[in-house]
Length: 96
Length: 489
Image (cartoon, rainbow over all chains, first blue to last red; front, side, top):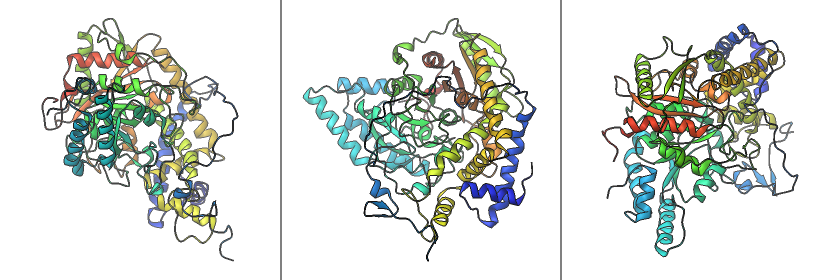
């Protein structure tokens, strides 16, 4: 399979990733190579087969909806920037 | 003083007073100090804390206070499991400086059993890799030959056990990450049935496939580890509430009449001749123990590999979306706005292999490609599960080589991801179906590198799988061989 530059840019955008210009072709070629490999699946007769997200066919167990601690330890220590009990981030629109 | 490596010998020696917990911890810390600089298995060593914990165990034993039978025995933790107050980085720059806010349940169970953590073990970044080369801490090297890889992603765990730095290590296995490095390093490694060991506190890679398991010299050590690790955990919604078997008692060593299925359609020209030879010799060994070797039909190895490299990246792309530089982890210092901060933080923080898998996962989940890739992958998973059910309707366990080759050279496959992915062809189907899989040493290649054999069982038939491996080790001595020495001490 061959991806257009536009398609690859869209995937990067959805991934929230940027790749350096000198490695972009390698990332794109790798994706195309893996896609080519997995396209072998299209040769299998999978009509009517139910998809399986999990190995187990049991339903996910439920638990009581009980309020517990929501802010774990080290939250402040682990925050890249923390002020007045909040995570500090750059403004959405940038410097205005 | 001779300190044994086997967990049961350690337990007996500690209980009898032949040596103290301090003796044991000092012994293993000395080996780490001696061997780790060249092997790079441990990335963090809890030297002082381990000695303090050992002194507390000794004091408790001396004063007659009840302590667990395994109290004082050391273990190592793969770097993707939380130990509260200590860094958890998943060997990624994006988690540099992150402090674990709670204990991983599996780690907590070890601590509650009195086991003493010696430190954190190297791995491929976010467990994505089969060579332990994709680590922000640099590659781990195989103790058998420092020019070859230890396998991955639990390469640090496998190398540490093989080098005698620790008798028991925790690994995680998403597509073979316990079994393949166990094979490459000549130790025993077990991926339990999915849901047997809690995943709470294991940093998620592909949640429907990830499973924690023990790695040690022998299957007896694995059974001791499973006795500690197996428990229902309400904190993990996929933890199964099944009756815990007596792992130790299950190791009878008798496999007379056990039907061992050998799948067709796996071994081909891509398999190293030494791997094929050791596998065939191992089947003869099983026959000599009274097992019946039965050819079975299983035609989904290639399809399972393809499905895995759709499904695992898809889950990873969703799981790793949380690394955005907002609440924890690396944040790019020079972003001008929020969106740029997120993209730059992720792009600068993740390594190339993680990026490759996020990109692949995002692609197969994206509009226009979901049905052709992701949905097909899920359907193949159904076929794999069904095929295993058919197999286990006629045999008790399946036997197959753990990996197509012995350990490959450092950098040999690092620039060829597809070649790297193929090293998991025999292990991946087991994860897709959530089954138990065990790798045990089966001999050596002509170059003197370890080769493993894998036993796979039906879901929650873990003890039967372990007993087959144990029986194999009652008549073979490959698991007692150590790098640089002929017999275990």
